Length: 253
Image (cartoon, rainbow, N blue to C red; front, top):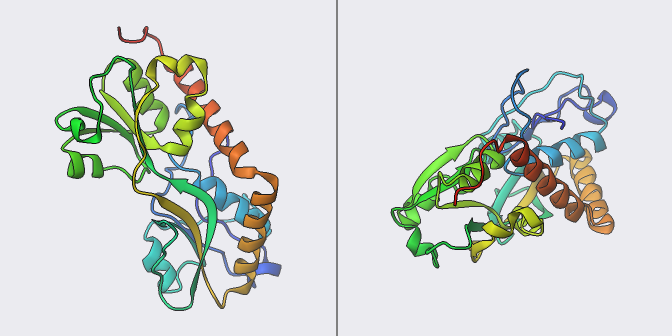
């Protein structure tokens, strides 16, 4: 599976020999040989790669990345940012346009079907697995008093759930809805209802017409082609396969 950095150098025809920088709240660490292949928590990097391709970027050109999303965009140190904002209500600086990608983040918890956890409030004092790069690190502890265990990627978090190392796993609803359609996850289909809608948007400066037009065209294409639905299904399948490959002990009974 390909691993992309969140910033790409665009072609000189598009960016006048200046790199196009995409800022995100989490930068995926560079892949190191010998590591296990892991699908990241969010599709941000894949979306950034798609925008880079739309702008004529090359994976072989120098890469730059920065995780200080809104700050870099406002200062002009990034050309576009991928931001998660409440229900699309982006409170961005004047001159910044928010283009919804169509991806919505909502925290959802899954557990074994024989769990005694029936509400979010009952996560207090219970162990909850989350993944690096997600929006929910710290929130489960702050809001519900849960004991968080942070793993490198969703596959690691879900493997911990399956082997009894945590009482629940919390990730995006969009991922779980696809994952729970797979028969091997039937025993882990108990869930808590999603909360707190967050929409993923491309935030672009109004005067950056090349990037703005590319982002608009990209999002329109995604909608007409049903791209996100296909992407989410593929991500769920990839994560399920990663768990399958790593699960060397039977499910906890």
